[in-house]
Length: 146
Length: 146
Length: 82
Length: 82
Image (cartoon, rainbow over the protein chains, first blue to last red):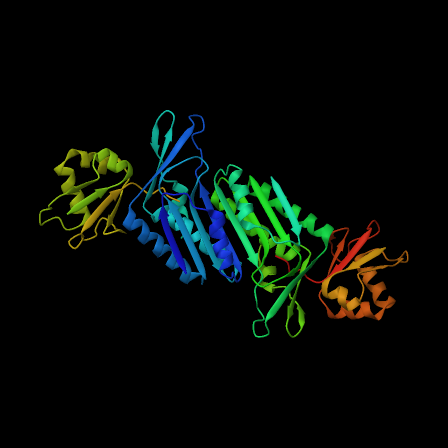
């Protein structure tokens, strides 16, 4: 079961986990939650804005989930990615992977976030109380072997 | 902040995550949730019983969390491990790690579960409708490089 | 051909999309970039001075990709989601 | 010396703990195991036929660990938590 959502509204991490738990979890669940970080704290980050390319973003997330599903024999996989203007500490991305074996759940989850960071068409813009900046791609992300 | 709990009662994964979210999450959160698996399904697993050595279990979990905290620069770490008689699909263990950098949160989380699997004094006994078995240690867990 | 832009590149170019009829000799992504650099100096500025990626019909492609069957080309900066 | 048992080993030995005064020549874990094997054949059975670990005052120790300052010794099977 693959579940992909791209949405501007906040997601309820608790509820998503509960759904997973209700789905008769047989084994290991690994979750990754990424939130808005205030990296410009001298200036004060007011909003993080996320722009995206809708059709392509959905396609890339689905392909990513399908790859992980096959490679690590997942029984469930959820990816939620937000767009729009977010506040500091608001969640941006949630990835949940479930498998019989914990190592696979960890590997699959990390693969998804790594792959997404370099392939999914989302862009972040930071709005501080002084000005706005497009976030530069983290070169470290490109060095990760997928 | 290190939070270690050993308890017979069920834990509310949703609530734990909410607490983490309320704690001004600055960056990446990784969770691991392990639940009761029915590995004896021909016979029908009725209960999984977990016995533990209280003083030592607390000590090992705390040491494990402290090691991870230092090595991967965690900002928060929660470990909950249950004991007593559990039903199929009930949660056994929850590990939440939080860091600025996602790779560290993944590494720390996996280290904790791996270390716990070979060092924390908990033992599982499966009660099926026919008989009861002590679970044997998974040799694969011993091969993991910590 | 419909070309769409995102993020910083959308801002520099100053529009979300542009429809351009390419001449027949524009076959690859590379040809298209050369054409656009001549077509308008704002493209010259973007392609010379900024990192960018090209997607044809929602797939990332290389510079020698043949665009003859492409319906929508997207030009955007390296992605920063997640 | 207080010795406590857990899980399968507790079941085989048939009790949760035992207090034993070791003679002076019992210095290491190894000495203790040899002593217990003589002391009662149920210990002989456990130590010969089952995998087990030893913790002295809640720390896993090796066979040559000196138990002279130990207050509580735990004997238990390989752990299976998590």
